[in-house]
Amino acid sequence: MKIQVVESVLKANDAVAHENRRRLDRAGVRCINIMSAPGSGKTTLLEKTIPALLPDIRCAVLVGDLQTTRDAERIGKLDIPVVQINTGRGCHLDATQVTSGIAALDLRGIGFLFIENVGNMVCPAGFDLGEHARAALLSVPEGDDKVAKYPTLFQPADIILLTKVDLIGVLEYCMDRVREDLSHVNTRAPLIEFSSKTGQGMEQWLSWLRSQKR
Image (cartoon, rainbow, N blue to C red; front, side, top):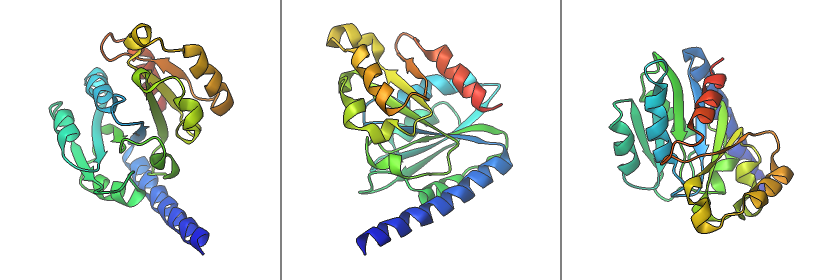
């Protein structure tokens, strides 16, 4: 019985996600779901990315957190449409919450809708939100064993960003271990070594994003 309940919940979520995607398609909006552990740099990534896409591509952001509007306030300083979704005790966003977030946005002229999902390496990966692509972030301070320990985050990813790579030398991070683990989990998604501090990997990331608009 419990399995049937879980299945029905996921099917209902998928149906709403399908409608979200159709609505975004009709508006010409490409949606990227950004997932990672807390503190891996999702907000900073958006703070660097959105100005680099302007003025050619306008963006909007849905920010998911358990509490506060702190990340949304940071993104809001970029003078773009931002909607905060607080989940309370929820460990991820679901498609219905995203529907409400989309309804609060004027999608006219928007090229990308970024969803900054709740910081969690497990739960968000199981829920389709209506996105067109998934970006998974892994930060150097988290350790080089996380791909093997949390494969469900990285398996469905369309692109993987290893963030804070400027700390690799300081933390004795083993890139070979990460690449080896990814070879067993996801060989489809490009891996970009990224640093918001130095700008490393930014052009690769922007190039991938622009390719999603074609």
